Amino acid sequence: MDGIQIVADQDVWRSGFEERVLTGYRAAGCSEPLARALLERAVEGIDGWTVATDGTGWIAVGVTEDNGATVGRIHDLTVPGGRAWAERWCAEHGALRVEVRLTGGAGAFADYPVRGQIRMRAAAERPELPSGLTVRRLTEEEYPGWYAAEEAAYIADIVRAGALTPERAQAKSDQDFARYLPQGYLTPGHAFYVFEAEGRAVGTGWVNHGFLPGVTFGFSLEVYEEHRGKGYGRAAMAVGEWATRQGGDEAMMFNVFGGNDTAMRLYDSTGFAVLDEFRSIVL
Image (tube, rainbow, N blue to C red; front, side):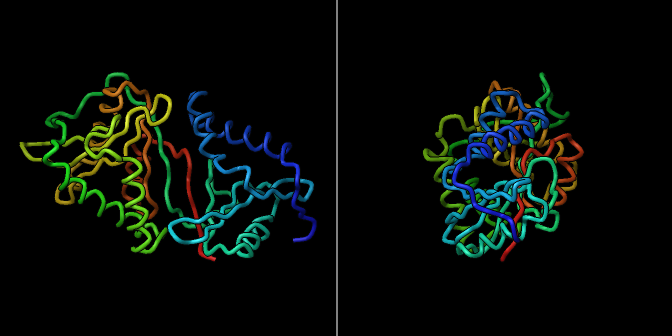
């Protein structure tokens, strides 16, 4: 595309970009401390991004290594029709796929498949567990079996979303579990639950209190396959709210992978708004 030039001085772009990101998080209902914590995550590696302009808007791109593959990332795009330039830049720098993080709608990337979403909602001040449902802590003896099942489900979710091959999904799973649970069952800030109905275990939960300011992150709220379709999915969300308040936080946040339309409909109906959406294409 003619007229697009890479800029050396990124100060003007950066101040505007950061304010737009903050505005998006504030509009999604984030507190100021949470919005700024999310901004820190959104601008990770920003000094290594390439920024370009046509005089009317901005493009910010970069490449990174992700589980053995070179990935292009379009971090900002306000130039009308600038997507083609950004994709070409990523390809010229060795990217095999291009990813975007979106807040507030797909915009120019509506044809990029959804790979994942971060959702969030304020927890009720005094959440109550559904009638007939009880919650207990997962025991240390139960942890190895839980871990194996959780890892298998995580890998399957990544592959179903179309984000990675099974081999790369396995590598990502190994890295993520090692990062988030370095001490396994005894990792500080993490809690593991089993929820039961009619004397039988119907699902499990894994949460991280204080993940971000005032936020409990729900790494997993899983209903066993044989108990799905019985309303326990909605009950699992209530367990997440209850656990959030048990940990002293005010809001619950979690990730949902692309391709899981059933879960997305559940989250829509229970008021969990999309905070960030991740989309990608293979070049």
